[in-house]
Image (cartoon, rainbow, N blue to C red):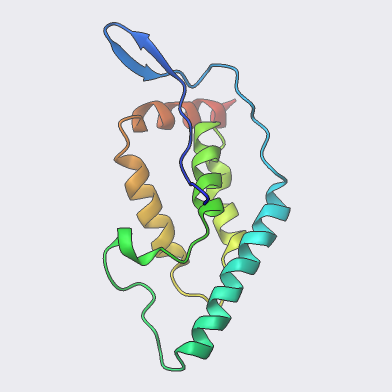
Amino acid sequence: MQSPYELVPLRFREGAYTPDLHLPRDSQLDSLPELADSIRASLEQFYQESKQAYPYTVEVLGGVPEQRWGFVPPRLWATLLRLFYLGRGQEAWPFVEACWPEALEGRTAFWNDFMNRLRQSPFWQELANLNQSLAED
């Protein structure tokens, strides 16, 4: 089973654990274009199979965000999180665009739901600061 969760290094400071996003970590991602192609193929297969099984218009975006994205490969979620935790958040939306087949609805809605969820993280401010500071370098 694949997991989309990112391991977050923590450091105990001033009586609490906080993310230590500057600890040396493996910053290697698989080749993003190759990974995007693989995820795109999975989403394309989902789309084609759904079209055959449900020849009528299907509302993929029904339900609450926690329920409607079950067809999205965990590798997509995991890669987006990894990009943000490495300070490469500016690459996340282009990665989603590269992964998402044109015919499959919901790309922007998925991104908005992902970002809304990420902003609820207790580490959001640290992530935002990290990505902002690295984008300015």
